[in-house]
Length: 116
Length: 113
Image 1 (tube, rainbow over the protein chains, first blue to last red):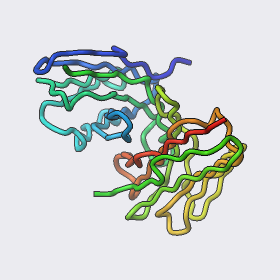
Image 2: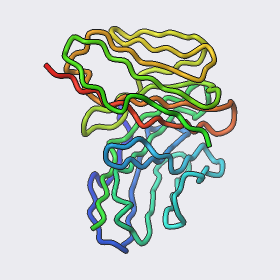
Image 3: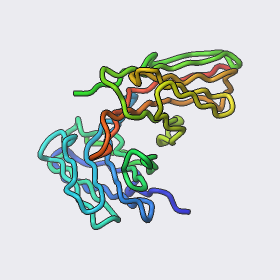
Image 4: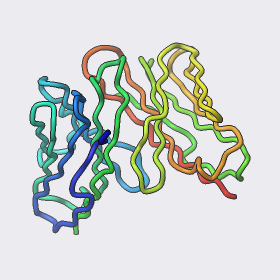
């Protein structure tokens, strides 16, 4: 079946502009995660959605970052007034129910963001 | 906050040699997952360990979870060029509530033919 998809695959923007990144999780997955991965680095947690619960935003690095999710489907990550240090690959992952028993994460291909 | 340390950061091996990456946490983990990321790709789930002292095998890959549930290892026997990539561990503290794992920085495996 279809996996997690993300768009765009690449985004080049100028410093100060806003960008919106999209994630389509696997159908039926209630948990959705956003991560940031800088070149050669590990995964930095940004935000977590679980069903209709309030999202866990504890990983967002600043108030320029925000994310929304429509029900248990598509999610968008918005970065306002982009800075050069925002350049990274933004990965989205979904999980069947985000509990201890069944929390394998399925990752999308990522969006490579370059801020000039 | 919780930290998951992973070593080494890089490992070069000749094809056919063994490889091990280690993951250590400052706190007890409820479970640990391992992912593989090929160059230019995205992380792909390999396995999850839950029980103290658990050992699981997948062909040439052996995964262990420590008795104290604070460390884990991934061992690859007789590496092949297809094993090239970065291996991440991801551990979770506690149980219940939000499942947000903490990822290690990863170990990049380079296999020389």
